[in-house]
Image (cartoon, rainbow, N blue to C red; front, side, top):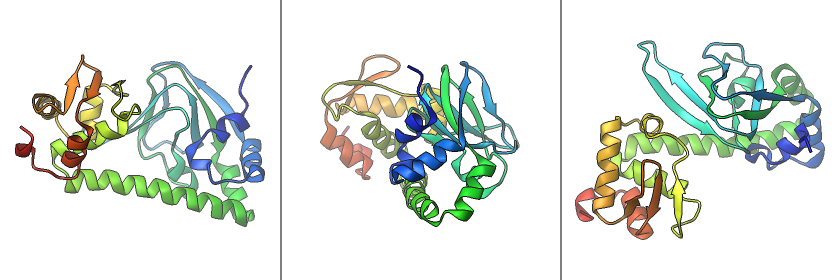
Length: 232
């Protein structure tokens, strides 16, 4: 059975704080969009069409510098959003977005969303609370780059990526070259860091994408800033 925009929005973390009536209002100004693998959803500098909510698939959001260097901002998986800040702020798309898999999204139309926020005080307050959580996430990313070394960044990412919480094997959601870009590392530094954590007995590298955390407590210490020399 085909999912409606209401179904998709209901599963979105950003809209978790919205009431049923507010969700219904957003569903009325949304449409379902489908993108085959490899399709560019929008380019950096394009007019923002609205807030995208991923229902199925995977979307890579990439910032491109004037010199051509790319930085992976994040991968949007089911339940996640992208282009939300540009849509509400009414400015151009700040990055490129590409479907890495066949992807289905709900698109909350930008012009109608802005009008709804201008007239619905309750909806505006609910979305502000949701965006506070998103800003907190972005601050965490900034802390990674500024306050953590390469090993701490990788350790923190692995802890967040391991949905088994140390009880089993998990698969990295992005290719290592994209993960390196996301963590502001070179591919060589990322590979050396993985090997250092494996040699220290904190993780097991099963193949290029599959990992098992062997010592979660020690990995948490590393993520918190324990000098690498203390576990090698």
